[in-house]
Image 1: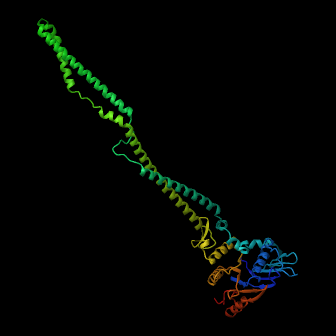
Image 2: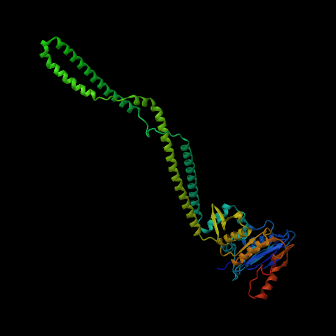
Image 3: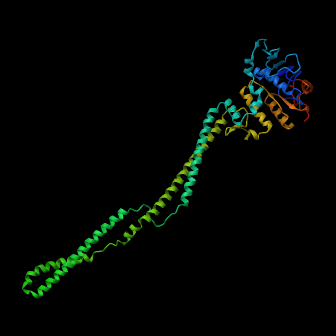
Length: 441
């Protein structure tokens, strides 16, 4: 189905319009110019009402001072004729075969944005992005990815902050050299001390026994001097004692006492040592936690990158209405520029392309108040419309040569379209009338 455009329009007594007949260019930009309060915007309002239905009906549709009701007639490129006239502005839609139809037929091929493009252009960044996502069918999926990306980003941010705090804390902590790696146990040292004291006690008993043996041998020797007669009886006992003495002597000569001074000092210093050990262990733990968090931060960064790649892939594979169009952080972008950084021409291109995507059968748009655009921007936008085979009818506070039609006091005061069409016929009879041909810039 070919794009449906406006072939002609006939308006009488609508708002500020007295009587206007226009045949806009099939492609490109048709500018309705004139000074303020002469009826330019009334032309667009009349087209919107005629094609869009009574929801666009002006509060006072009939021209002030006129006793004749407003009359509107729009002929479309598919042959359908749309009329509103009479006291109640009754709608009449006639198709090429002469059959009557109604508003539902018009709604099936006329985009609402085409009649009210400023509504889209003045909407918020989020509303623009939601509109685009809706028409390309990836809104829900992209929303899920946005939420996932935000959650992972917040997790990574929190982990990074904690890791930095842990590392800073670890660096600020004191480290003690020449202390054990583990907490020292006082009970183990005391047990070891008791064991050593037991050994030392045994040694003392052996020394006492040796002393006792020496004492006995000496006493016996004295008795032997005085009591020779008891020598034989005592000799056996003497030899036995001597043998025990010698054995004890050898054993005692090999005894080594264990010093307990170091352990006793360690027991006294154990609290100080353990404080230092715990400090070192906490420092090591803090450093390990910081390293673990760094690894988790890197993992979250990779996860974030994967989500962004998935989003990019989703958008790259989407059927976007305009090359260079995209969505970043919930906002529409065009050639990597967000809406507020786009030129006026670029904003119009984006809005028009989205409007066309919503209803590809609608080949025209209405634009009000283009006076903010300079000549180069107007020409650039008009050239793009031609290349896309689109029709735009716009208004501009101006009476210059860039205007295709000049409205003055509710009438067409100047029609550059007729001049352009004649010039086109002379140069090439089959050329389509265009509002930009022959215009001096």
